[in-house]
Length: 450
Ligand code: SF4
Image (cartoon, rainbow, N blue to C red; front, side):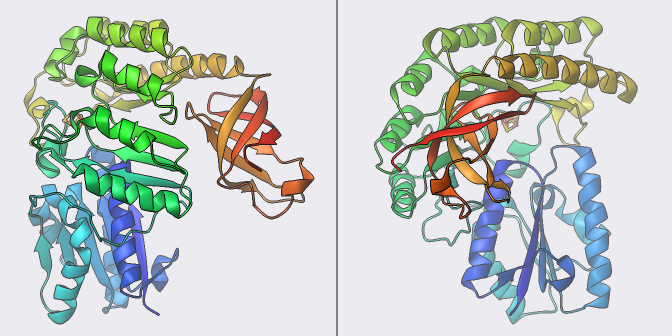
């Protein structure tokens, strides 16, 4: 049996692209392996949002090249955003590479591989940004048997000054709503409980197709699909996040009360340079509307420190925003200078030392806030979707997530579910007894529809 190994770097969109590549390989008879030495095909699905990740990818590519020297029949491919951005560089730096293809081509992987197998001496390079975004009839291997990623759109029109995505994934293109709804119904019929809608800016779903559903209509239609218990989505852009969407989240019983809203900076001056197209007054206003309409919602964010020209005062505004808003959690990053972006041309780049100090200050602050928020849940009973076993034993320890996207680990003390993993995929009620910044711990109280 031929085996494949895929290493995915970056965001959920990349994870989803890898699911498509895996699905197509398995459709061709390949089998997955966790041991790269056993593989006949190695694919690195890459990201280029941060330089550090890029270094890691090239270092791993060097190791795969070494493996290919020992095993010349090995097929080696690089895909994703880095492939799209640097196909020439990759050919120069990794002469043994066989396949280079962009994110738009992940769903055509079968064709790419067949072309290569028919004509083995040549490399295949395909970084076209195709038109007509459709994922119909493309095999996919979902990362979980109960929760599935669904790409509803690809690309981005926003051109934030630091971001490479609009150059690597191209302009926004929405998938036809009928196709999305059909796929979700099929998943519901095969036992999937949670749908995670993906797009670089989901709020602008449908803007590029005439007379079609917008994002709010799509959400409400998915909410009607029987069998699906939870709907999540990411990423939302604050400039497009409005009261209508908040009302839809409140109305749609299956739409989870977790809102991920990248703030990026608390300083209007920096937001302007980032070309984010909102200011902090607008951002605070959205938070106020969310808290008023959905008081139990969790709000998470992405924030970058050390953007060119970020002064102590600018950073102070970000710290203040963390204190004011009290996010449930935050993904904090150091600004990474990406060639071809507008921000790479800006003066007053910040030293690494200062960037690191600012990052640690935010991480520590957010940790305290997350602990405080999570500890407020102690003693309460929360509904979770059980995702998997976290520790095997006489009575298994399981984990799952609340509707607000908090990870819960719990011990099953109920004999009915002893020993066989049968809680996976069920909605369970857990009494929370302990909490830290990242996890809640509790005990099983009840299970919905036993
Ligand atoms: S919204 Fe901005 S940060 Fe997000 S993908 Fe588009 S350009 Fe990049």
